[in-house]
Length: 297
Image 1: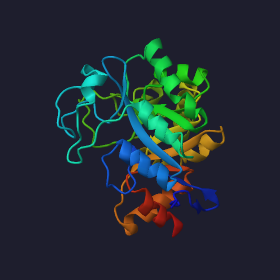
Image 2: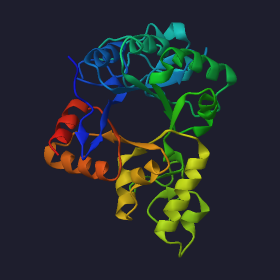
Image 3: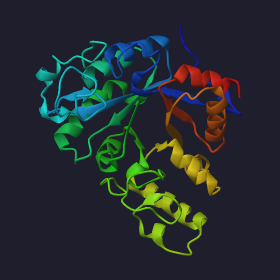
């Protein structure tokens, strides 16, 4: 039976995306069983993570190392395809799917597949071609996003919908370790981590800074969507800047990640705030519960 993860709230359709293909939580994250459960339930959108292996195989897996969630240790990028077929998740005992296997399940439903491309180094032409070929059967129902905008330009030129996660350019995380080697490296004058010169120029009004930076980021990639940490969205709102509404003027949708279920008293107001600033998609591990909260708004 289909689940309603696309309620209409305040006159607009809001989509709840199943993060790492998590719907009921009965299956391992990013597993083929989890993807199949989402497709059978008719969810409007699910997300999986893709990493390249040593032989250019494409593994659906979130972390850069196997250690935390499987029976194996080591960096994902050092394994070849054959070796990953022997790895099992803990505690579920699931195999790790290849991206082509996920696409084969998706193609039999109507679900939009959101692909989080984890590759940060420059993607070779061979890898881009392999990824494009794998996505071709669901070309009209795939959205591929990344912080590494440089790896999305070629896919956009091939006609695929792409999404920008601007975390490497700016984000709000006040408690972050400034010496952790994470980009951006400096806290700007307006409470955002941002290495752009304008973020550090005194007497530049917040409104001018924010408008200019949005234009800068839009120029990085012709994206159809931005995927933004919800804490950044809320911080922008304290400066009376509703990012989703600004993006909508330019034909770009906004997705907020990754929203937890903190109970109705805390989560309903959060969802209301995100919707009021123009969020169209909520990425979450708790899609059914959050959709229920949204319907009650």
